[in-house]
Image (cartoon, rainbow, N blue to C red; front, side, top):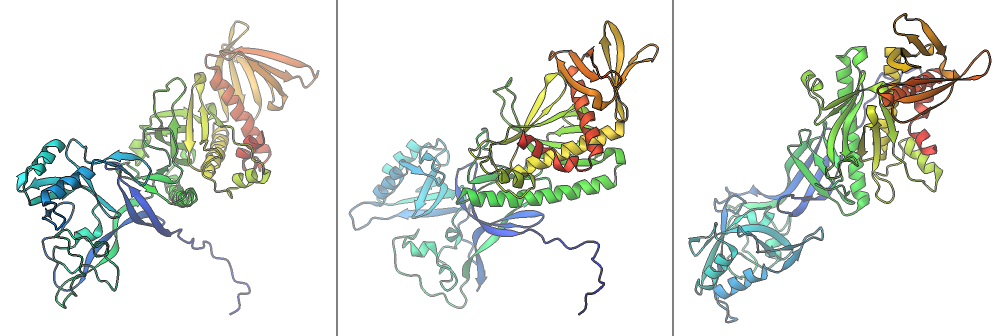
Length: 540
C-alpha cells in the first residue's frame, strides 16, 4: 500500500498508561497488612483482594465464616495429657507475647482492653474478638475476666469468636466443604495440616460431582478514581517521608489506601505512574474549564501540594492544599473546586503580579547533565538525595509567605514554568499598575507600565515628575520595611539618578516590579519562558 502524499491525522490516539502488580495494603486502624493486586488504568486505580469463590456444584452452605459471622473453635483432651481448657489457656497465654509486624513495629497481643486477640495460624494472621466461652457472652469482658473463665471452664472449652479484620480466604470456606480445587490452587488450610474442628491431618475426601468447588480469585475491592486525587509519601501526623510506600487519597479525602512495596524503586515507579495519570486528567479538566471561561479567566495550572508550617507556628502540622493559577489570582483551596460557587470560596487569594515564586535550594549534583535532565522532565527521581523534600515558596505582601512541598521533581518544574507563564499573561493583560507613595514629603503616584516603564506623577495635578524605561534601572536597595531607593541611568547625561520612595506595602511593590521586568524580558525573547524558570534556579 502506497503512503505517498498521505496526510497526518489531526490527532493521534494516545495509548492509555496502564500497569498491574502486587503490593501490601496497610490498614490504618488495626495495623494489619495483606497482599493486594493493583490494576492501574487511565482513570482509576483498582485494588483487588484475594477471595474464595464457588465455581461449580450446588449452592454453598450457609454455615460459612466471614468477618460478619462467628465461627467456633473447640479444644478437646489430647493424648499428651493436657486438657482442652489447659490448651486454650496456654494458647491465649502465648498471645500475650510480643509480635512483629511486616513494617517492623513491635506490638503487644492479647492486652487490649476490649478483649481483641491476634491469632496466628502459620503465616496467616487475623484479628478476632471472643464472643462466647461455653455459651457465656464475653464480648464486654476484660482480658483478665476471659482468662479466669478459661481456667475454670473444665476439660472441654468451646470458644466462639468474631472476626474483626481481614480474614484469610481459606477461612471463608463453608464448614465441612471439601476445600479448594487442588488442580487449580493449593489451600493454605490443608497445606498447614491444621483444622479448626480437631487435629485430623488426613487429606480431605475427594469432592463429589454435586458438591461445590472453590478457587481463589482476585476480586475488585476498591476503585479509587484518579480525577483530582492526590498521592503522598508523608506519614500521617508527621513531616517524615516514607521510603517504600505512599498513600493515595480520593478527591474528597473520604477514602485512602496506604500501599507498601518491596523496594523504594518499585514504590517510586508506581508513584510516578499514578501521578502521571492524575496529571493528564487534570490537564483535561483545565481544557474543559477554559473552553467555558473568558480569555481573562483562563486556568494555567492547578494541583495538590502539601503546605509546610511556618517557623512562627512550629506546633502546626503539614496540611494538603489545592493550588490554582487562574486569571489574575493565585488561589489556595482546602479541596478542589467543583463548580463556580467553589471558585468563589477559596481559603486565600493573591494578585499574581504581587507574588514572588521561589524554588528552594536544590542539591548540587556531581553530574551537570542530571540537572538538565531534571529540567527537561527526563529524570524520574521523586526526591532529592538524602531525603530532603522538593519545596517552593510563595512570597506575598507584608513579608508573609507560604511553603509548599511536592512529591516529584517534575511537579516542581511544572509549577515553576506555570507560575512564570501565568505572571507573564497577567502583566500583559493589566498593562499598568499604580501605587500611592510619598517622595520628599509629597504624596505621589508610582506607576509601572508594560510599554513605557517607570513613571511618577503628582496626585493633584497629574503632572509627570519623572519617567524611565525598564532598561534604565541599574540597581535598587531598601530598608526591608517601607523605603526603597531606585537607581536610574539618565539617557542624556549618562549619570546615575536616585529616586527614594516610601510605600505602605513595600514587599508587594517590589514583587510587582520584578513581575513587570520579567514579563518585559520574556516579550523581547520568545524563548525566555521555555529556557528560564527552574534552569535559572539550578544554575544559580
